[in-house]
Image (cartoon, rainbow, N blue to C red; front, top):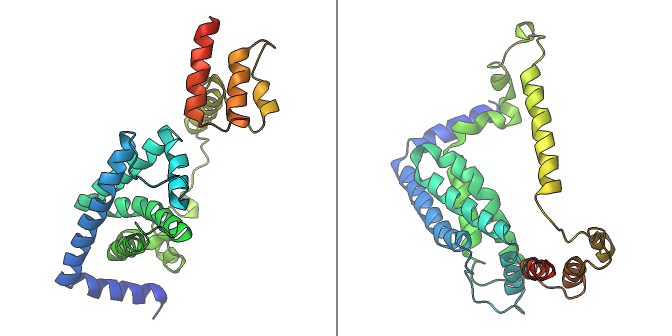
Length: 239
């Protein structure tokens, strides 16, 4: 009996047990409860800890807080993953979204020896893995030992068409152009990697707001949001 057949058999027997099903529901609710409060704090742009900056975890979280909308984005993904876990038809998607976030939190907690989540985060990782095992039947075809069955459901060689998908590749081209334009036009000024590179954005030698921004980042080491705020104020004064 192959690996795929063995796993199918174990999974089928597990799904027949009501108590294991009840435990899956408990994991879903507990995991959602673990992410919604902290995720919402990030979404609204509030700190969710009072750790001192000189604490290893506090230092990381302070820098994380100053990443701006990335901080809110992570919170939004936490809330989204939690909500998907609460909806029976989207549990598997929620678990796949939840897993990389909680694994990152777990490794961070262990690396910084943070008491707040040193125990809970590994347990949450185990809970997500349990949910993925519980829904094994929904994604079983991604594993190599089930590939023959998955391939049988795809078009065969004789069914392939040679028609060039012009609209698809036109869409690819448009996406590439939009990404390039986004990176070039969205931001008026960027930190760049060095102060010399940063100053290449200063079009004139007396562009004080630009020069001050570069110094704020590379010499003073202040957060990006504070340097951008000062840059905008200096720009208004120069105008």
